[in-house]
Amino acid sequence: MKRCTVVLLALLLVGASLFAAGTKEQAPGGDNSLDTVMSKGLLVMGLDDNFPPMGFRNEKGEIVGFDVDLAKEVTKRMGITLKLQPIDWNAKEQELNTGNIDCIWNGFTITEERKQAMTFTPPYIHNAQVVVVRDDSPYTTLASLSGKSVGYQAGSSASSAIDASPDFKRSIKNFVEFKENLTGLMDLEIGGIDALVVDVTVANDNIKRSGKAFRILSEELAPEDYGIGFRKGDQKLADAVWQQLLAMQADGTLAEISTKWFGSDITVVGK
Image 1 (cartoon, rainbow, N blue to C red):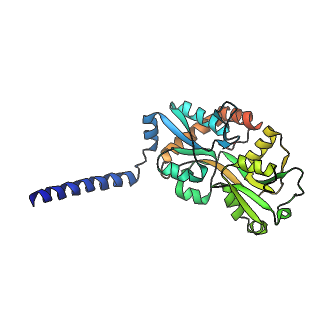
Image 2: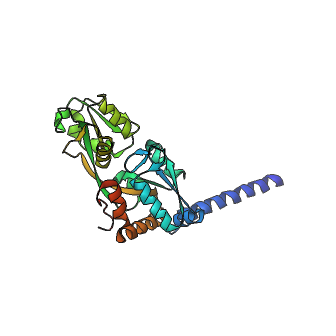
Image 3: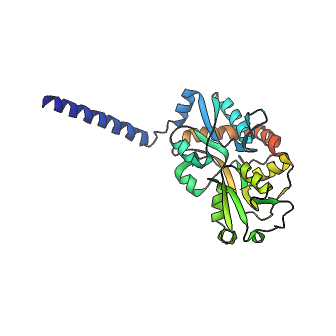
C-alpha cells in the first residue's frame, strides 16, 4: 500500500511538471523562437525544390533561386547557418508544426486560412495566379476554356484561386492535380491538359528560361502576396528575419538579388 502511494505521488509530480511546462510554453511572452534558432546557430528553411525561380535545382543538382538567395543573405547577417530542407508541398504545414523546419520560404502565398494556422511576415512580393496555355492553342480568355481540362499544383494557392472563381470552376470539364508545377507544365506541353493555373512568377520564369511555346492569358484568376511562414506564435523569429529584409532593402541588396532573378526590383519590402 505504501509503495502504491509513493508511485502515485511520483506520477502526480511528473504530471504537474508537464502541465507547468506546457503552461509556461503557452503563456504570454513565452516566445523563445528567436533564442532557439540563435542558440542552434541554424535556420531550417522548408521549400519545394521544383519551384523556379523561387527555389529549384540547377544542372549541378544544387538548390538555387530567388528565395534561396534572400535566405542566405538574411542568415549570413544574423550570424547563423541556413539549411535548405526540401519538403512535400502538400504537407508543408505538418512539416512546420512538427518542428522539422523553422519556416516555409518558397513563394508562399499569404491567405486568411494560413494566417489562422501560422505566423507570417508582411508581404515581400506581389504575385498573381494566372492561366498558362500552349501558344498554338485557341484559348484567349478564361471563358474560352469552358469544357476543357485544367491542371494545378496540389496544396498550392492555385486551388484557392480556382475556388474563389466559381464561374470559372463550374465551366471546366475536369481539374487535374499535380505534385509539382513543372510536372503540370510538361503535361501541358504534350497536350495532357489544356491549361495550367500557376503563379505568374513561375510562368514567366519557365517561359523565359525554357523557350517553350507557352503564353499567359491576360485575365488573372487572383492577385496575392508572398510572405514567409513560421510556426504560430514564433513572432520574434519572424520579426528578426523581417528586420534583415528591411535592412537589405535600405542598402540595395534586395534590389540587386531581385534584378538578378527577375530583371528588375519587383519586391515590396518597405514600400
